[in-house]
Image (cartoon, rainbow, N blue to C red; front, side, top):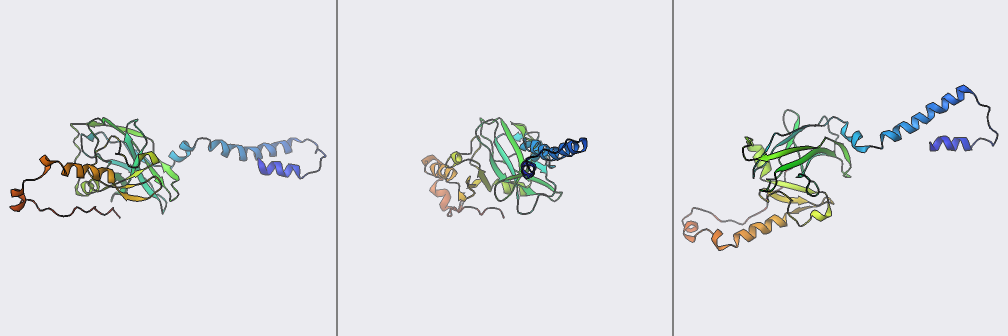
Amino acid sequence: MHRFATAARAHSGRLAPFSPSAAALWVVALSLVVLPAAAQSSPAQGVQGRGITLEEAPCVPFNDNGLMRAVVPNPPGNTETRLYFRWDDHGDFYYVVMDAAADGTWWATPPKPTDENKQIEYYVAVVDPSESVVSRSQTAETPVTRDCPLVLDEIQRGYAENLVVGETTEDQQGKDVMGFLCDGIISRIGWKGVLRADSTCRRCIVAWWDKPEALVPAAVLLGGGITVTDIEASPSRP
């Protein structure tokens, strides 16, 4: 309404005679301004109306990686398609960047759930370089079960063993991914977008290695059964 109010103030103080045609023009003009503003009052509705179809996974295997898929029609250039996930109703969401399949669908594997995590909550979003959400799906929930028949293929398993997990809040830095195991997580992206090694999970590995009962007997090492090399972080996916 701002530009219409400015135009009205530009007239002299004399009131123009009332006419039905003038009133009709004002109604049309006001509708052009008021209706878009009302449509913007619910950002989620506008964002979710751009065609992302989330395929709700039937289950996630106990202590193993699940597989989430979505149909994302023609995401704009210079954007990321992300799977946002969390232990159902626990803390803030994390995310992993999704990969595109040959059939045009997008997929990703969240980390392995802990014993306590019985259900995963997730959604898919397309995000631009300023971290603004271009489009997103509805939110889904999938149970973690011991009899889930899911088997990842070679590419999916390679993805799951080299996870780069993104954080969405400052409070997540330096802490475990709530409700998920360290297994497979190699790097983190901080809430400001800075990539770093996952020091939290690395501390778990060092603590395990320092336990005497976890050390391999020297005879096995000398016999060539196991080769010990320097552990180097896997590079993140292109």
